[in-house]
Image (cartoon, rainbow, N blue to C red; front, side, top):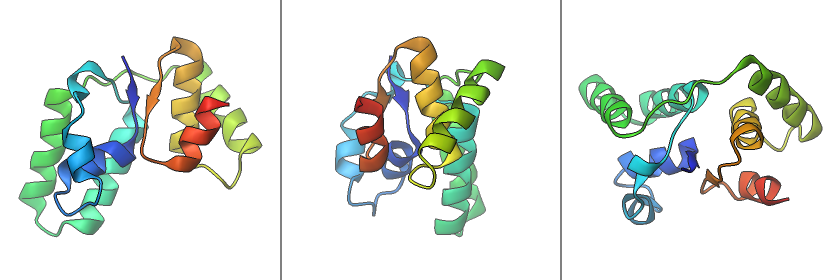
Length: 121
């Protein structure tokens, strides 16, 4: 059960994204996201897509497709440590994925090369 990063979700819903084809070939129903990833995707879509109905529809589709695995308090503390150790290379949201991976043992599904590099080390 991979933990899905916002880079994959944005490419999944954005047909003009160069990674869209790669994203739609993935079975995201087997993955999970966290609250920070969902918020990040919503913010990116709000900036890139001007039509409110389309943005809200895509967020709804994500919520219907991929379960949200809640971050625990320990995840947030671990995310802060990852964030501090890798600052400014990764965002706090990316750090939350690393913390979630630490707790669950699940891989991170991302198109972000920096996050993938840190995740595999």
